[in-house]
Amino acid sequence: MKYLRWVALLAVSVALYFAPGQMKSYGLYITTLWVVYWIAGVGLNLTVGYAGQISLGQGAFLGIGAYTAAVLSKAGVSYLAIFPTAALVCFAIGLLLGFPALRVQHHYLAFATLGFNMLVFLFLRNEEWLTGGTFGLNNIPRPVIFDVRFTRPLDFYHLSFVVLVVMGGVMAWLLRSPWGRAFAALRDNPIRAESVGINTTFYTLMAFAIGAAYGGVAGALFAPLVQFVEPAPFSVANSLSMLLMVIAGGSGRFFGPAVGAVIVVLLPEWLRVAQDWYLAIFGVLIVLMMVWLPGGLLSLPDRLRGRRA
Amino acid sequence: MRALLEVRDIRKAYGAIRAVDGVSFSVAPGEILGVIGPNGSGKTTMFNAILGQVKPDAGEVMFEGRDVSGIGALALARRGIGRTFQSLQVFGGLSVRDNLIVAGQEFVGSAGSRLFARPDAGMGQRADEIIELFRIGHVAHLAAGSLSYGQQKLVDIAMAFMARPRLVLLDEPCAGVNPALIDELMDLLRRLNREQGASFVVIEHNMDFVMRLCSRVICLAMGTMLAQGLPEEMQGNRAVLEAYLGV
Ligand SMILES: Nc1ncnc2c1ncn2[C@@H]1O[C@H](COP(=O)(O)OP(=O)(O)OP(=O)(O)O)[C@@H](O)[C@H]1O
Ligand SMILES: [Mg+2]
Image 1 (tube, each protein chain N blue to C red):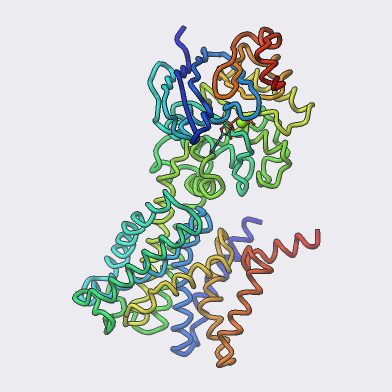
Image 2 (image 1 turned 30 degrees about the horizontal axis):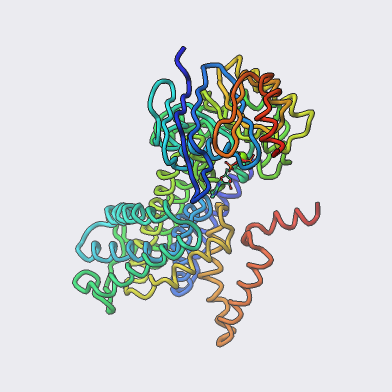
């Protein structure tokens, strides 16, 4: 059974790696964006799904990562250094964002993180010397790593996919380690957790910091993907999309963010044929899903099994 | 012999309600102390104040000869005091076995070492021991949240013993547990007391249970200590009877 799962995982990975081979550049762009959001979602899923916190600030970390990559790559820094730098910067700022979570929970925490996102947005818009203000920064180069150029869309997709596999592997390992169990205990019952020696302060801060680091890495792919950064994509609205992505995919399920990113990134593209109606259809679909499948799309198999039993 | 736990003049008020109003007692190593008293007499609040779950207004707590007042719930757990809560408190999303492992894993090594530890954090064997002791093997792999109330209660109590605590504070372990299981629970606590050297403080409304299990009993009423003594002494104590009957 376990063995079968590994085979399936490998097969899907290989398929995903090669599938976009024939795509045109716009299709490749959207597929790569899907991978980038998936990475950010893996991090947010740790914060929200596994550790039971709430965050409306993941869009800000995507932005911090993106601007870090934009500024450093334009200064000639190698992407080999940019990815870890973006992760570290976001880890540190994520740690700070964790502090409100030590005092408040639920909707209060949601608003605290939302306020943080606004501050980051204002910073990106107003600190022109660094961020270019509303005009943003353009001509962001695509990565060259060990003399391999990831300039062509397909090559850049492959790089993004490899980053996804590495980041996903790290998360799987983290969740299987005793830390994963401690995060779940924090989510299920923080008071009980303290009484059995679990340092809830530490794990809360880690849940935010590690989740933020994933947002940073995603951002460091977002910038060279679009090759242009401006504040708009990192607003509170995008953080809402990211939270929707985690919840609609299946919060606390490992592949939830993959499905969630389909809903948030790909579904709107597919609905484009409906033209003016697309937002309305999107909205209705989300309402229906939240009502009938509050556990997210990946809870569907469990639901169906439950029905039959 | 030096007391294992010593509580001196502990107090906690909620506005005008003096929930705990100056209680002092001690627990000797190996002792099983019962705490009785009518509803609202301050038993749970006293536990919470001792364990740092709420901040006491005054009072001192000594554990193994050291002042541990105000060091907080986490630090007390790390020093070797386990507890259960009056309401059920299990980690519903984790399996029973994972509930036990997580209740013990943080006591070994550092956070950094646990990141690279085996998934069971070296706690698997201890968890299986406890599972066998509490006879919950048949549900060990089910999510704790999916069990019956009585089963969850056993898991809840079992968790308090994972880290081999030297003192365990139990808040109404019998509440909601069927009578047959209550006798089993008593045997279990006696064994843990004998074999693992754990001392207990047990809040309980089930008088039969208290009388048979405890070596000494204290009775609270309106936040103060009304009486203390041997179980048989309490049964005949007029003040205690009056407090319970509300005369
Ligand atoms: N968080 C709180 N806020 C306000 N009042 C409280 C709070 N907790 C307890 N009290 C009050 O303190 C008093 C003691 O409550 P406590 O829960 O300690 O009683 P108890 O002896 O454990 O009762 P029971 O046997 O019903 O569990 C009660 O009058 C209660 O209303
Ligand atoms: Mg109580």
